[in-house]
Length: 175
Picture 1 (cartoon, rainbow, N blue to C red):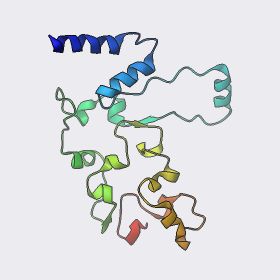
Picture 2: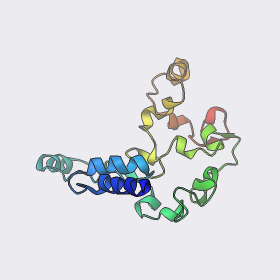
Picture 3: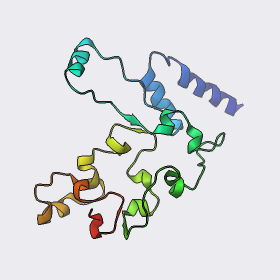
């Protein structure tokens, strides 16, 4: 009986006012489930449309191909929640070809941790990164230590100009 009551309460929370309160519905669903797509962006106002037509249009976020196509079973086993079709550390390599025969591998990649840097569903950042590329590396690497090296004078966060983010035959993942 308690399970039934919980199910009814969850249904009321999820579907009550879903058309007029999309952010609340999204917040509720994402609390219980991984990979819930973000709510649709509101239609732009006339002022926003005029500004957008004045220059190149930026998208709010990009989506991973299978996720955008709602091909969830490309990564997830159907009818089994969040179980994957391959071991998590090998999942991305089923479709994404990375040369892992290099002498040096970036730590997260070597550990099969693509999700340390990339979102598997959607992101507002290029390459589905979890943060802006100009500051991204400083999520793990000590900014003060890196900037104290004279080689990095006036680099301004463009790490991937010199460093490969995945693998290299050169020390420090230099290109």
